[in-house]
Image 1 (cartoon, rainbow, N blue to C red):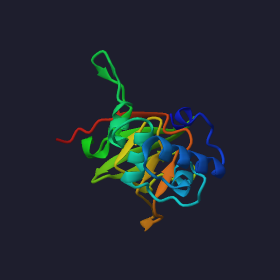
Image 2: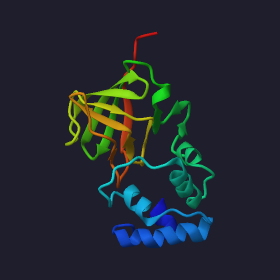
Image 3: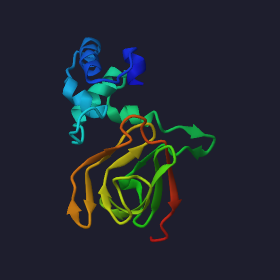
Image 4: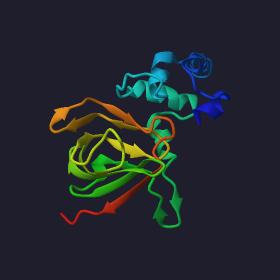
Length: 179
């Protein structure tokens, strides 16, 4: 979406300078090229983007807020809602979710409450079965911003998964039977 609006590919750090200028020209709002480099995985810094930065990107894409942009990924097909977004607050403790991070690379996670999940199966290199992760929501076509990754109880800090392609699929594998 961003590359379509910008009408150029974003592949190198210098591309983020031009995009930053284009965002300002089209919205009147500033977002630094270093912030854009982080969003496009061109930086080793893995901090979670601020709401302002996400809202500026949404404005650039002609949405009022980032939440409005995310809402466009929730489509309906008849009476069945296509699963394109999951908010941690909408899950029940014990539910198991399978997230396709990239082609044939999956994370299967169990919700523990309060945005906390335990990895029950992983084919993603830097996250292993038994690790604990924290996030607010996961969305199709967007990166997954993990607020925290814990390995053997040790906090590894934040991490961003699927930076370029975005998450490919989300499914609830097992609904919780707890009431």
